Image (tube, rainbow, N blue to C red; front, side):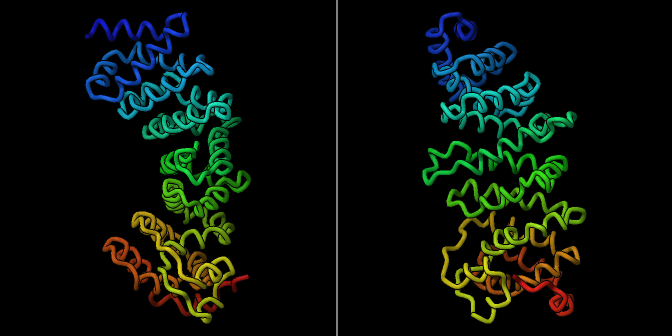
Length: 342
């Protein structure tokens, strides 16, 4: 078996395209099982570079997609992900997506999934953010966000860039990533927030996690966050507003985006993690004085009060209560100072 694996890896670099295609198809199959993964991992010093070369050179042959799928499976191992990053896998993936993603959406989808795995390791995040090169820093992220926001589909199988949502969560876990996403001139966070309306749960969950992570910067970036209030508050409050129709009195104290949505019954956001993440983001905003005033200006406390009545998940209820305890005793004066909704 060992000799067969070694020979198979050699075939990945065979000058005949048909041999390469046959070999990489077998490798893809091997990465779908533990024994195959173990055997290829033991030969990673030869297998990984060969697969990356195929990724870049096998345009239109089908070998590129098989190589990408193999790398996705192998990169679930953090040590292999780090080795791939060191071999330039982030640059290679972004280059192929840019050049062939439109013509080969299945290949692009696999490469986005590869980038998800690579950004689980610190070196992969740094490579995608292009840290250390001010001239291009954030360029890869901007390209991914643009593709993420321009391409969506009701059918998740056809949503080529849906996994960008998971990449955004990964990079927003570090300060450098949050800084790039929140830079006003780039306008990336605004684009991302607007994807919260998607019916695709992967996109929705990724957007919620990304917003929540960016709110860790609320103490220094609050004004940048509040400059997006028109989009930010609906994204954060509607998932935790419950299903009830709000009274006209309540809705008159809200901006149009919220009052319109809350004027009729809605389907609840079933994913409790999304509800918890949006509440955690709200908490970090209302820790700041201006954040609380903005929260009062959209009648946020009333929305949480009504939403809490429908909540059943203990962890989510605890998140509601944490915000409530923060607002106690600070509400009336700030409510008066809060800006009136437009």
